[in-house]
Length: 83
Image 1 (cartoon, rainbow, N blue to C red):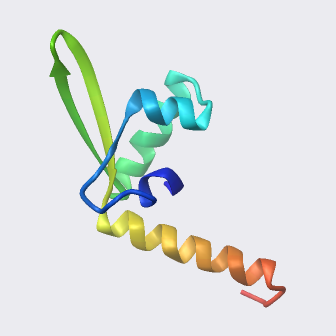
Image 2: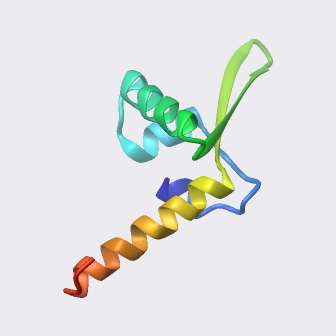
């Protein structure tokens, strides 16, 4: 989510790029993306480029909001304030 939130709202990242950024396996990353998609936090677009499948993941408005709240909570914890 951090990588997706660093992009403009309409931009996404390809599965291969996310895999490289996170160091996750195909299966692990796929499971995380599926969970985030079911929660409405990301949208997943599947297409073919030439004969190769390409999956692009984009943070939704709901996902960006949830991530912002998560970061705010972490900042509160780091600052030593009760949450």
